[in-house]
Image (cartoon, rainbow, N blue to C red; front, side):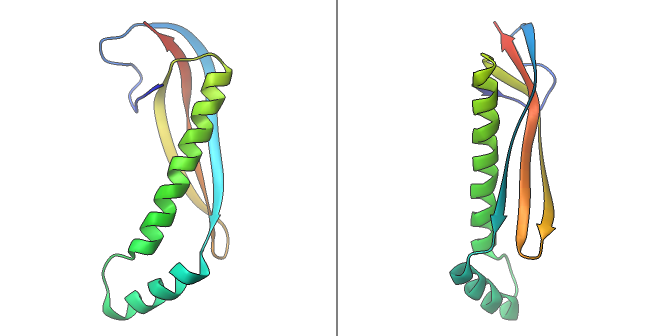
Length: 104
């Protein structure tokens, strides 16, 4: 599956639009990582535990979007976008969306 943030795939021609595709996940904090993150707030810097958790959530959302595109028999996704929002205290939703297409 080709995935791009642009509205075209360089060197390819869009033959058919298959439509909107998306994938999402809601990720909560992990108690063990939360404790380590709390300690890091005392000294400052990147909270790597949260970075790792959110990266996993993004990958999961993208994977679900790809499955949606595969179900539509697409071979590429253009205009990929990622959004994150808080849905409750300690939980964030990650949404990946784009347009499924067939390219040649």
